[in-house]
Image (cartoon, rainbow, N blue to C red; front, side):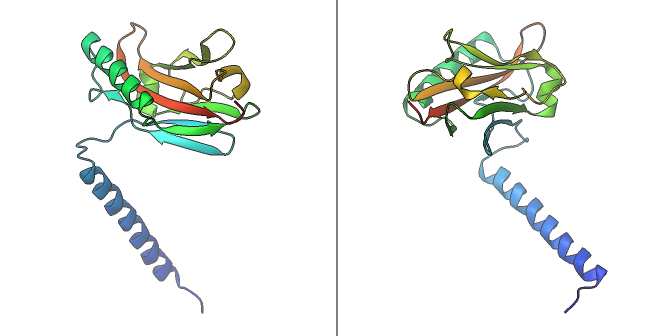
Length: 171
């Protein structure tokens, strides 16, 4: 049996229509009124994508909002509720940033590494990719390392913060 071009095109429309409907339903179900910018952590062939832990619709976060964000993230971390991904020291780790947030600028760092803080992306703008870093350079000595991704401009106005847990599978 062969498919004609109109049948294939119609089938493609159905798939695209279903994907749009599913995306709209997911946004409605999560009470989102606007799409949230995403950050992605890639480890080897796996990845974890997340919405920001702290975001104010594209406006800069106040000092009070940033403080509350850190407190809420600490609670989520203690409860094991941060987005997490398994990492082995031989893996490569990279971070991908939403295009709109990348235009403002961003950086990414962990509370691991030999100095107690390891940088995956030093402040950069217009780049959506951190480059690959050897996991052994960014992991802490415990089983968990916190990865923080911050969108901020040159004036240090913070627009979004993402937290990820790197689960060290060799510790």
